[in-house]
Length: 167
Image (cartoon, rainbow, N blue to C red):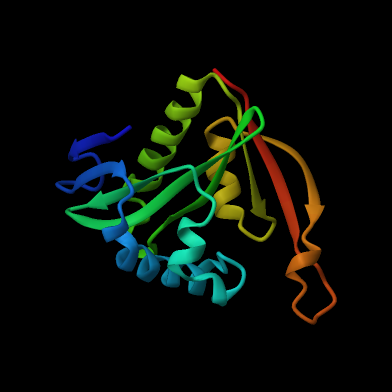
C-alpha cells in the first residue's frame, strides 16, 4: 500500500508522500534515526541506530518523504491475530510536517483492511509519543519493566503498552 498525501499535505507548500520502504532508503533512515536517538533516546541503545535494527523482523514498512527527502518510517509485524506497530519515527527537523500522522494513517489503514487490532509499546519517558497515540484513540493497556534495558544504574525503564481495536 502506498499513499500520496500530495502537495500541501505537510507544511505550507511542502510535498508529503508516504510509500513502501525500499533498500535505497537505508542511509536516509539511519541518519534520521540518529537524530531521533540523540533527542528522544529512541532506540534506547545507540548501538541500535543501524539498518539491521530498522529492517529486522518487520513484515511491512512505509517511509514518509517530504519534498523528496525521506524523513521517517513506520513498520508492522504480524504477531498472532494482531499487528504490532514498531520502528516508528520522524526526523527531528520534520516534526510538525504531518509526516507522522500520514505514516500512522497508512499503518492503521493496513491493519483495518486486514480486520486486526494493533498494539505497540512506548517508553514511559516518551510523553510526546504517548500524546500522539492517545489523540488517535489508542488505549493504554498496562505497563511492564524493560529489564533487558538495564544500563548499570539498576533502574529498568518502564514500557507502556497501547492497543488500537480493529475498526
